[in-house]
Image (cartoon, rainbow over all chains, first blue to last red; front, side):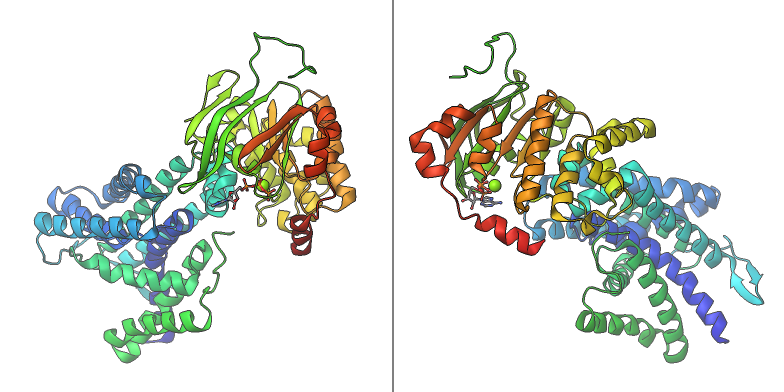
Length: 287
Length: 261
Ligand SMILES: Nc1ncnc2c1ncn2[C@@H]1O[C@H](COP(=O)(O)OP(=O)(O)OP(=O)(O)O)[C@@H](O)[C@H]1O
Ligand SMILES: [Mg+2]
C-alpha cells in the first residue's frame, strides 16, 4: 500500500479521534473533570444510530442530527444534577461519578443491545476517488463532518460571546463570576457540548466500525493518549494530537500489525509524559 | 457617626454588611462585621496584612459563602444571591492582584467585563469608547495582549473592565498593590475622579494615610473585626489609629509583587 494512502487513511481516522478528544479536553480544560464516561457516550451514540437506521429504517442523516442532541441533553442533565453538586469537592469525587455513569451506561447498553457487535451495512458503503486514491465514502464523510464539528466548536469558543465566557471560566473562574457569568451555566453547556461531540463521533463511526457496548473504554484510552500528546486542556493540541496519532496508528498497524499499531500510540504517550509532559500545546485552554 | 452625609432615612446604603461572619473551610476570618457604604461616597477599608479586608469584600461581592449575618444591596437581602448577579445590581468588583486574562487582548478583556451588556456590539463598543476617554492609556493598546502590559496598565485595565457596565458602585481590593509611587498616585487620582463623578467607591488599601486623605469615610479592621470607623479626616487625626495603622508600613507585599511583575 502506498505511503500516501496510509497517510490519508491515518488523517481520516484522526478526524474521529479529534472530535472525541476535543470534547474530552474541553470538559477537562473548563471544568477540571476527567470524564471517564466519554467513550461510553460515543459507544451509545453508535448503538442508537444502528437502532435508528437499521431498526427504524430512518435515514442516516437523521441520526447525524438527532443523536448528538440526545447525548448533549443527557450530558447537560448529568452535569446539572450530579456533577454540579460535587464541583467544589475533591477531584476524586468527579472521577468516581463519571466512572459510575460509565459503568451504568455500559451495563444499560448490554441490556438494551446485547453484548455483540452491530454495524450499519450499506450506509455510505461506496468509495470515492480523490487525487488518484480510493477512499471509503464512510471514512471520508466521517472525517469531513468530524473536522467541521471540531473546528465549528473551536470557532464558537474563540469568536462568540458565550464561547469567550467558557474560556474565561477555564482561565479565571473568579473573574468570570464578577463579570456576570454564571459558572454553573457555563459548566452545564460545556459538558453538554462535550457529550454532544462524543455523540457525533459515535454516529460517524457507526458506518465504518462495528459498535458494541464495551467499545467506549477502548476509544477513551486512545482519546487520553491524544490529549496527553496534544496537551491537556489545549483545544488545538487535541486536534493536532488526534491527527498525529491517527496517522501513527494506521502506519503502525500496516507495518507491524494492529496490536503493535495500537500499542505505538501509548508508547508515544509515555514518551510525551517523560520528555514533554505539557504535550505539544499544553498551555491551558488558550487560542 | 456619619456627619459627612445628609441623613436620608429613605435611601438605604448601596451596600450594607450586618454582623457578617465568614472564613475559609472551617477557619473563621471575619467575625461579626458591620459596614455601611453610602451612595456616592468613597469608603476606605484599611488594616494590617491578614486583617480580613479582602475576605470581607469577597463575601460582599458574593464570591465567598457568608456564614451568618446579612449582605444588603439598597435594602434588598442578597446574602445568598450568587456572585454573578452583583453586576446586574450595579455592584462591580476589582479583585486584589490586578487580575486580567493575560492571553486575551485588552479589547477582549474589556469585552469580558461587558458580558452583561449582551451581544449588541454597539453597546459594547460604546462602553469601550467611554472607558478609553477615562483611561487613555488603554486607547492605543486595544490589540495588545493584556499579559504584556506593565503592572500599572494592567491595574487600569482591571478597573476599566469593572466599569464596562457602568455600575453605580465599585469595590476595589488594593488597587495600589505592587505599583510604583507614580502609578499609585495615578490610580488614586483616578479613583477620586470617579468618585467625584458620582460613583460609589469602596476601596481596600494598605496605603492607609494616602487613601484616608481622599476617602470620605473609613473602617479600620484588625483580626476580622472593625476596630475604628469614622470620616477619613477623623481617622487620620485619631491618635490610636495613627500609632498603630498609619506608621510607615514596610510594604513587603507590594515590594514582592513589583519584583514579580
Ligand atoms: N483562600 C484562603 N484560604 C484560607 N485562608 C485564607 C484564604 N485567603 C485568606 N486566608 C486567611 O484569611 C485571613 C485574612 O486574609 P485576607 O486576605 O482577608 O486579609 P487582608 O486583610 O486582605 O490582608 P492583605 O492586606 O495581606 O491582603 C488571613 O489569615 C489569611 O491567611
Ligand atoms: Mg487583601
